[in-house]
Image 1: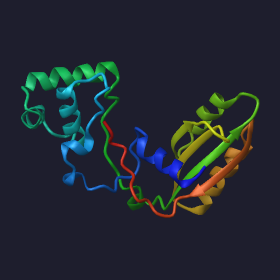
Image 2: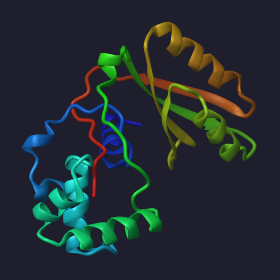
Image 3: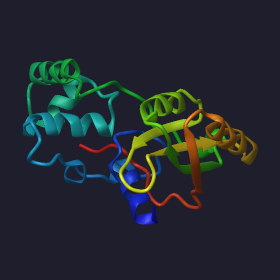
Length: 183
C-alpha cells in the first residue's frame, strides 16, 4: 500500500488516537456531517458541540446549538441508545505519554482465519486499530510503542500467530494530522 492509502485510513477512521489538532480554531463547518446521514441538523449541531468539548453542560450545548436543554438531553439519549454515541473519552497526546513509535502493519492471513486473527490482534495492548482491507493484504493494524524493543516483540508476536503468513510494517516518521473526530 502507498502513503495515500495510509492517509485515507488515518483520516476516515472513527477512532481517537493522538490529538495534534487545534480544537479551539475549528468551526462547525469543519466537523459537518454529510447530508446523506440519518441524523438531522439539530443532531449535527449537538454532536459538533460534544466533539469540541463533551464536558460542557447540557445547558451550554443547548445555547451553542440553538435548542432547548430538553431537546439536547433527549437527542443525546437517543443517539446513545442507538449506538451512534458509543461513549465519551479524553483525547491524549500519546507522544507525551512516551509512545515514540506509531506503526502501520499490513498482515496477510492464510486458511480463512482472518476474523480470529483480527480478534487476537485487537486484544494486544499496543493495538489502536485493526482494519479488514481490500488489496494485496488482508488486514492493517495501527499500533503505538514506547520503544523499538516493544515494536520488535509485537512484530514477532504477530508472526508467531497461527495463520499469519506475512507482515509488512511501516514506521510513521511524522504525524501530519491525526484527528478522528469526524461527524
